[in-house]
Structure formats: C-alpha cells, structure tokens
Length: 135
Image (cartoon, rainbow, N blue to C red; front, side, top):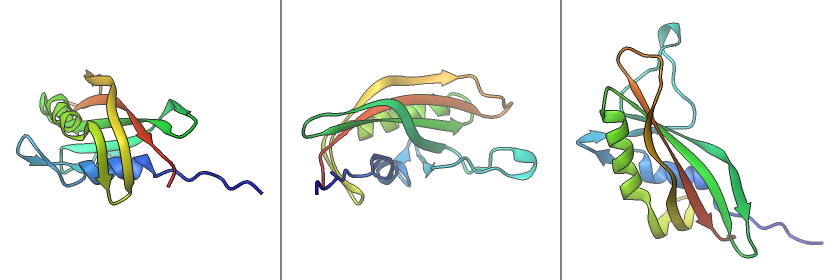
C-alpha cells in the first residue's frame, strides 16, 4: 500500500505569522471566517485579516505550492498599507511556524484596494504562493 504524502497546512502557517503581529502600530487579528455583528455588519477590532485558499496551486515531485489569499479590512488607506506591511514581513525562505516548516512564501498578486460596500472600511487583497515539502 502506498502512503499518502502529508504537507503542512499553509493556511494555519500564515495564520501563525499574521495573527497578533503588529503592523503600522496596530495589532492584526487573523480569521478564517469573517465575524459578523448585528445586522450582518463586519465586527472589529480592525485591522482584520481573512486568510483562505485560492485555486491554482500545484504539486511537484518533492514539494507543493499552495495559493493563499489574504484580505485585510481596515478604515481607509490603512487596509492596503497594512497588507503591504504583512506582505513584506511574511515573504521569504526557510520560515518556521508552529504549524510547520515553510520553504518559501512569495507574492503572486500584489496588495490592491478592491471595492467593498462600507462607508467606514476598505478592503485590500493579495495572493501568495506558499511552498512546502512533506512532513
């Protein structure tokens, strides 16, 4: 019987790197699902980073590349500025996290402001390629 290869959970690894980190003087809270308050409005504190998978990863002979997206919600220009700071801090090689070892994190889609229905919050999105090897 052939045993399946098990790779580190890259979503959890990004969560480890982002949650509780300080960027631009604010502590970022990472989540897997957006928290909603009364009437379905997004619940703070902000900045808030939503981490999820994106289509288009690939498995190689000895490694795997997952595409992961991070969305940041914050007032005004703070959303894209915070995501730029997060991007700068997490990208690199040979990254150890409580959720596993990451060979490399690189930007696939640079942080951009995107439309969001709110009078008080902006949304910024970036996509990352996260390379790992089997555990």
